[in-house]
Length: 247
Ligand code: APR
Image 1: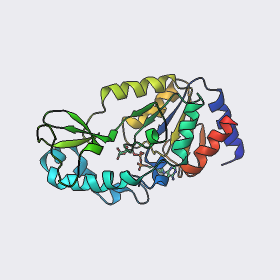
Image 2: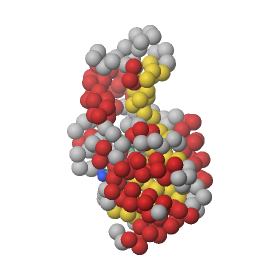
Image 3: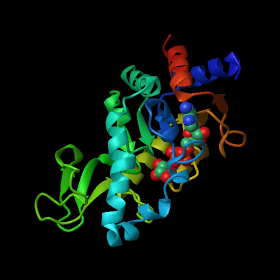
Image 4: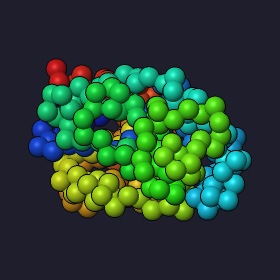
C-alpha cells in the first residue's frame, strides 16, 4: 500500500461531512477474538449449522456449551485493540458519525465509541424465549447450562442473530439510514460474505460515497468496489489512517 493511497484516503475522510465505519470480525482478531472464516476461523472448528435458531431450540443442551466456549469464555477476556480505540478517537474528534458492526463482542463500546449499530446483536444481553424478558449477560451465571431464565425458568438465548433469524428492524433501518448519509465509509475486517450486512458498503457507494477498505487480505469489495484498499492488520492500519486524518 503506498503512502499516496493512505494520504488520499485520509484527505477524503477529513473532508467528509458524514463518515461511518462498517466493521467485521477482522477488527477484533488482534484482541484475541478469532474470525469466523479464513485462517483459524470459528467455522473451521465448529459446525455453523448448530447456530441455526431452530436447531438451538431443539438442542439447547448441546448448543449452549458451544456458545459458552466460543462467545462467552473467549470474549470475556478480550480487550479493545488500537483499531477500536482509533475509531473511538475519530468519533471523539467529530469525524465519525457512527459504526455499523457485524461483531457481537462489544469491543467498540468498550473502546469508547458511542454510536454503534450492532447489526448482528450482542453477547452482552440475553433474552428468554418464553417470557421474552431481556437480561444483562453479566448477571447470568453459566455454571448451569442451559442457563434458566431468572424470572420464569425458560430457555435463555444470547441476544445475537442466529442463522435463520432476521436482522432487528430498528437496527437494520438505523444502519441503512447512516449508510445513505455517509460520504465516506471505512470497511474494516470484513469480507462482506454474509447478507444483508454485506450490502451496507454498496448502499454508501450507490449514494455517491467513497469506500476506504482496511483488510489483511483482499475481498469481494477490494478491486471492484473499494476506492482505497489499505492492505494490512486493522490494529496497525486504522490508527495510522486516523493519525493522518487528525494530525
Ligand atoms: N486485520 C484486518 N482484517 C483482518 C484481520 C486483521 N488482523 N484478520 C482477518 N481479517 C479479515 C479477513 O481477511 C476477513 O476478510 O477479516 C475478515 C474476517 O471475515 P469473517 O470471519 O467472515 O468475518 P465477518 O466478515 O465479520 O463475518 C460476517 O458472518 O458468521 C457470521 O455473524 C457472523 O458477523 C459474522 C458474519
